[in-house]
Length: 283
Image 1 (cartoon, rainbow, N blue to C red):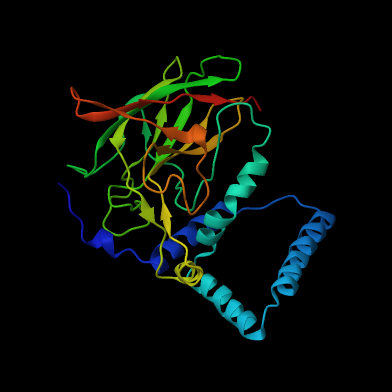
Image 2: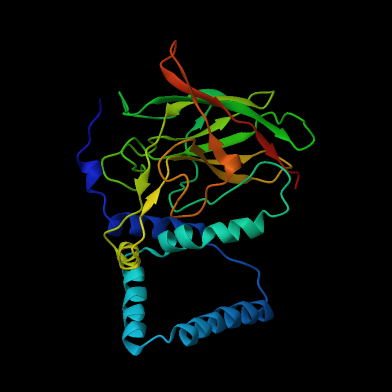
């Protein structure tokens, strides 16, 4: 079994800095009018004012908040904070009219341009990659039922210790990351390992908030996917595992019943196997 002590030295500062740098590379912009910015910013500020009045916030608490907000930036944890506590509501609003498969949050650990793989493939991994082997297969179709030939299935997930490649030291660059191209019937068959539940980084500012509020820091084990095809809306989603720890109390509140897998062991292959189909909306 592969062991990697350096992998376990990942810190909030290092992963936060990496997540922040990745986000900056996206060069995110929005064509938003002054009127829209005014409306949104004013409402958010008024909501904060309302909390201060209702909760009778003290100057000491206000100064502690300022110090914490500064620390979030210094730790590079704004992507982590926003993706854990805010993004699930943005995703809910953005996809409320979607007819096809359910989406959920992207999270802070997506990396574009992962290695392209054929319809039947094994994700890049280390020799003797720790974890239970998993065969994940299915088909990509349109809401009309049409098979979407050549659909792209981007998959990435944590390893058996709960760490992501490119965000923890000692892992190969594309470990457990790949872009699978579906066949002419929109079918795919991906071999990987089941990821582990993991704690979001707790040694930085977000960890201080969690400790101060008495929350837990755990996310359930999950597969990340982006599925796309020409003429159809891309779907970003996560798939979880039935009976897994923290499926019912995910800190990121991203679990939906439609996204829970129930893999069955196959004694012949020694792997857990599951079929999950994706249905994409037209643009």
